[in-house]
Length: 324
Image (tube, rainbow, N blue to C red):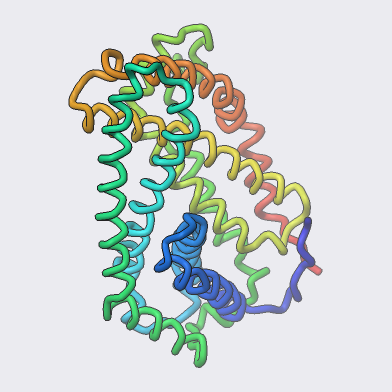
């Protein structure tokens, strides 16, 4: 649903205050349930909350004057701990619901060893997470943010109206996104023109994934930040802006599934200390099929985002917020 546009007179500092306060509340709400460790969802919600809060602080850093204890590096460390434990939860769910039912009896015996190792690793990760959430550093971070929320301070830029500088906030990140080399994975360039590799060239495309998979993972992280930032300002734009946000979400999910499979493949081979084709051939075959499916989902998006006309339409959209 399209949110109602805000009063166009709101300042960047005031809007930053609203955004940071909302996302801080979403961060701290699941804390109690995380310590109970009965449901993976609160951990997921807190991880998202931490990421969104970090993005909000980065977006509005020129407009607000936060206490020194609100450190981006500390927020990053906590987010990393949350992410490590959450990733292991996702890995466990993927193994037990997606792959385990398809295994042969011989493979299942090996698979039990994998799940046991994963369970132990997750327990260690959760213990480290609890330690950091109980630490003085984390409590002082929260206290510093709460103190700022009670008595916010702004910079001179924070006194400017959002509507005056909105394109200046959004365009740099979009341009950075368009220039990311991840869009060129699985392409060829001749005389300055970009062409996608044939979808039937499975071997060639999969080789590109092995060579440049990290570029796609980095692209996913950038898109996540672009999406969060775009969501913060969705009330200032028409419906076509929301369509772009939904597209960012789709791209993030497609690239996320690809990365999850790569992490899973590495985890399995590291745990079993053997080539996956030999110890879990069924899993290996499924992963190959999923790689092919990835390109069928990815190439239409890739072609769209490499299009000059599409890129220009996005830039134009960002320069035309709602003025009333």
